[in-house]
Length: 137
Image 1 (tube, rainbow, N blue to C red):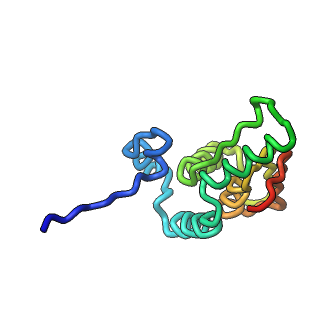
Image 2 (image 1 turned 120 degrees about the horizontal axis):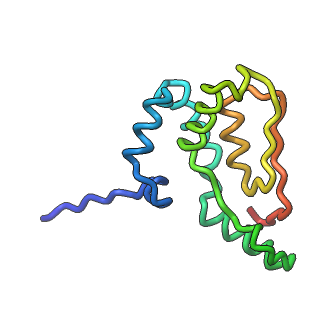
């Protein structure tokens, strides 16, 4: 009897990003640390209830109900590792204090960037603002 191996595609693969490049960047920025691994695990636990497909479905439904046809209202999401790498680079070059500040995500969708930001930095406050408030999610 032949066995079959099933491998699910990673987030990077779905977005067409070379995983080797992402891994090199993560290692260079020390994003393979236990603290970042914990933050990644927490992010996945917090956001697992609302996968990309469901969030897009809710967003498109709300856009249709409200007749919001502006193309700038397209739904998109962050990927945790590149988001964390961006924060690490900003911190490395002095653009982010050790703690404090305010994080605002305009067009926050399901709020995944707000969750990730909360796990990656000790902010004074975080805010997610969404014009479309999907129901039933």
